[in-house]
Image (cartoon, rainbow, N blue to C red; front, side):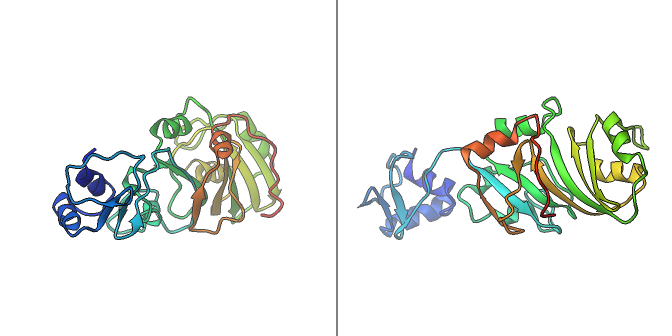
Length: 243
């Protein structure tokens, strides 16, 4: 790849701006000042601009993000803060995509990656990846709520939900594991069972648990083990005693 294209792709500037930076002798390749924009480079080269090394790691990136309430699951929005606003400092952040979505007022686990195939696996309805949510309601659910959810529900608009696992913690708090991702599904299921969700947080995807040490609005790289845990179709028994 040409050096000027490499620098432009890494957001050092436009192609014309990059050529001016090169002409000033600000770019080093493997320790040598390079001014020729046609110089061929690869991701194995060490390339720096004004002494700052450019990240050339081509490995796929997987991030665990603790989404805060108040931001939308989108790359850009004219009016609202977005999930991707938190990642704009990452190299090649435009290549990242949000795996699935959480409503604006919902907190919790989101995965952000540049691996399109991995993203497709996680959001494919055929994969039945379980997702577990903690919720609080403003009213008790009906007495047989756990049984009804476990048998599979039909919502008021005739949407059919697969059997889900509902575990009530007390009258107004519970955990709900679903295996699909219909529009506002958790909120609509709780509503059909007699309550109204006033707080919602995603706790896990597959066997990947939200890292309790990850502050709201922050993210970190996932380990290789965690990337596989997220696509596990059989949720393990987890403890939510700290909720």
